[in-house]
Image 1 (cartoon, rainbow, N blue to C red):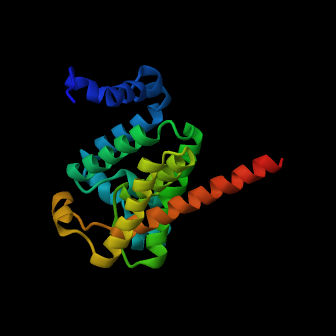
Image 2: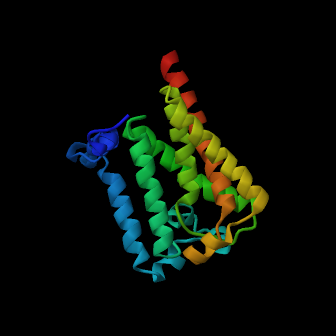
Image 3: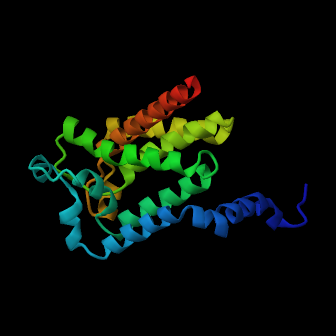
Length: 214
């Protein structure tokens, strides 16, 4: 079978991009783009990294805000770019699954809890980046797709995320990626990010049940 216009094969993708990046959607997602811009600016100010990153000793001394700020600083530009690409992919996949308030609730759960989990159950001394929290939002997105009967994409993503975590825990930190981002890959952040995502889903489920009971 021949295709008269090869570009027609990409029409569904182009239509999706036009919808998700329309002026209305961009205005709706303005806080997200502001977060991305802020994290990008912080990459240009390396001196701020040590002030904002998770530091076990300083956190124990009372600098609790590092549970939040550690997520917005990165080891270098490559680290930031990888996280931004993950955000954009998730935006394209999940923007139409739940409304923005629910996604911000998920982010507020995943952002501090992945670092708190590392603090309580690992010996990691410092951490920067969004990858842990992004594992949490990704698992929530895969479940949202499954709830919408998007079995193929949601199912593949769900299996991949859980399988990836198991693989990392069995094989350890990927050294080639560590060289690229100039920092150890905190696979335990990925693990606790995934767990925080499941906790966020549990909160959503309980909240939904309570709302229906009323």
